[in-house]
Image (cartoon, rainbow over all chains, first blue to last red; front, side):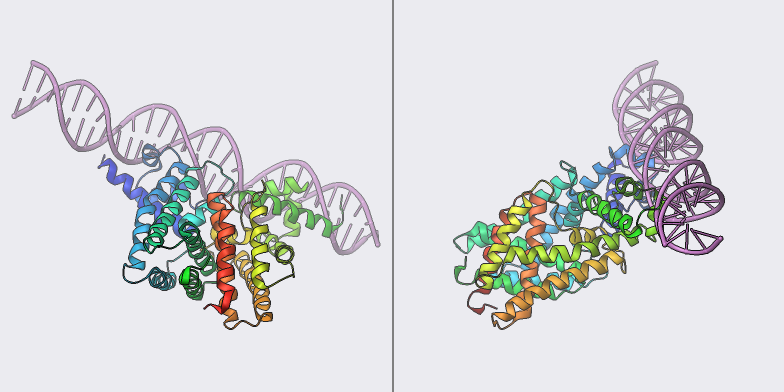
Length: 190
Length: 190
DNA sequence: TAACGTAAATTCACTGGTGAGTATACTTTC
DNA sequence: GAAAGTATACTCACCAGTGAATTTACGTTA
């Protein structure tokens, strides 16, 4: 019984998001995703070319919401240093949630590191570039010299903090990253 | 025809290291490892309890060599800032090699993020703690206040740089991380 | 307005292959 | 001859992906 095609597709992506993010890419089978979406496997393959195709779509769907969340975390009040401090504080809080499992893009890139050209790697790269672009604009507005380098270093701090928190399951690394960001931004270091 | 048991075991771990590091944990089968080691699967299961057991051993075997390499990279000449600058410069060079695929510990943790209690997660945590300990001693020798926080921030910079390089396949993030480290260490920021 | 045709969406049942792990027996060394 | 180590050949579950038939929505025609 045909339902709305786009709706079904979205249900599949939503199911994939939950499963992939919590368990990883290779650990989740197409059957499991189809079942969670309430759909047969054949229906799945009607909407997606392959599992790899779905993986790409899963990350694409995560891009904007993630960047938007970051912007909310940072807010728009105060200096860049203030905004980054707020950001890392919120990251720490978020990482203490029971469902938090690090960055889906980073984890996908880690899992598929050798699959040059895989759609997921492209999606991850694009997403990280968009994050960096956001930071660059923020830094630029404040009139720093070396804005590109600072933005890049802030990205390093963000993904480094996420990685360390994931490994140690300890949010204190967010605080350290926040302090490092503040040091980086004070008096035009670099 | 029995060979030396320990030798066989080491061959298996060596095969696992190559395969796991280049292709990821779930992507490599026990059959593939056994074949690469020139051993039958039954022999593999004589030496290891399970695939998960092997994964843990693979990371344990990687721990010391990795930390030793880091120490060589940093050298012992000059200030901590100098040593970290050298470190990140060497990291950048290394990451340009054709076989470089990021940090095996980070990638394992990413792939097994939801497997609380998995031997690989323990091994990864232990390894990162040893790295941080090394940094802490270095920072302490120089008499910084907030040495723990600085050491933690340096770890964040290292793993952040590795992650960014892996995603973008661009070693310039090592340079940015090096500059951030220098800023962090100058005039007892924080 | 009522029957019809078609394309979009879906299902059931299947295939070929590969995954982790094992039963049993053989071979070498001491 | 006993123990450590290895081999052949297997089980059984699961995996990505498919073939053929079916159901519904909806615009077209008589």
